[in-house]
Length: 82
Image (cartoon, rainbow, N blue to C red):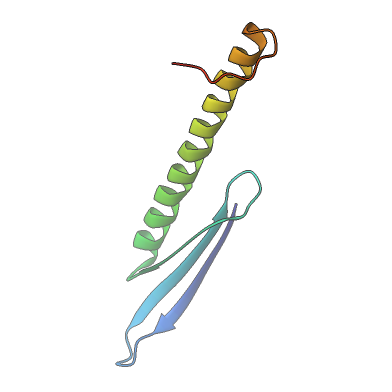
């Protein structure tokens, strides 16, 4: 996981934060956003980190079901009905 937070100024002189998150097993999932303070920025970063992790966990779970089904069916490539 890589996090980048940059403080910026609006045209009328107010601060805001731009954040970037690169996450996932291969580090290529990218989320980007803006926040008015650091607490909001980190909150959004952690929300996206959890979403990306949940997506990968669901993919792995489905891959395991397919692999189990393949083994149970003696190598035929049928999808699980579950």
